Amino acid sequence: MTHYYYLASDKKMELGNGSIDYLETDEIIPGFDYPVQLEIMNGLEKECELRELLQYIRNHTVPFKVCTVQIANLINSNKVELKVREESKILLHEIVNPKQLLLEEGHLLTIKKVPYFK
Image 1 (cartoon, rainbow, N blue to C red):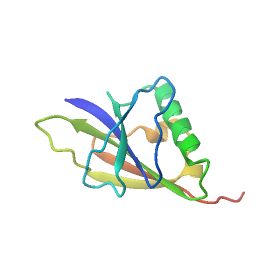
Image 2 (tube, rainbow, N blue to C red):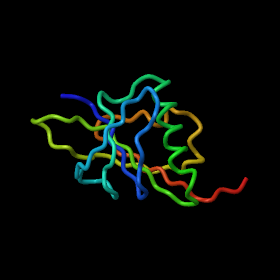
Image 3 (cartoon, one colour):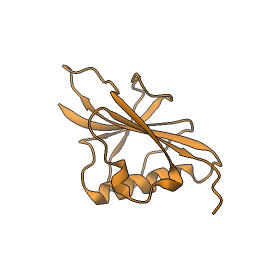
Image 4 (cartoon, rainbow, N blue to C red):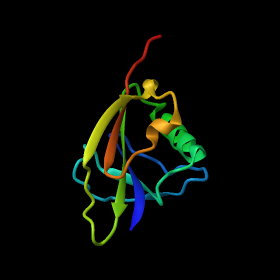
């Protein structure tokens, strides 16, 4: 059994260009609101990996006034069905620490970018 981070968005996602290996996928996973587009094998545990994922999400959303990204930490195994067991939501500008992207197995996080005025 391997932990995967799955990424989905309402906008087309490109492959990242850093130390995280993003793989294109078209998995259908119940619980996601959008098609899953990318997967990261072996999950994310180190703070530097979480920082890189947060930067990837910020870069992905730059061209859009409104955009949604969903990420989930799921076990990929022939014996276990890919299934979201818990969901939460956060606005992109409210993410102040990359550790907010560290998800328990089965958790889906919806990140919404909306116009933000300081």
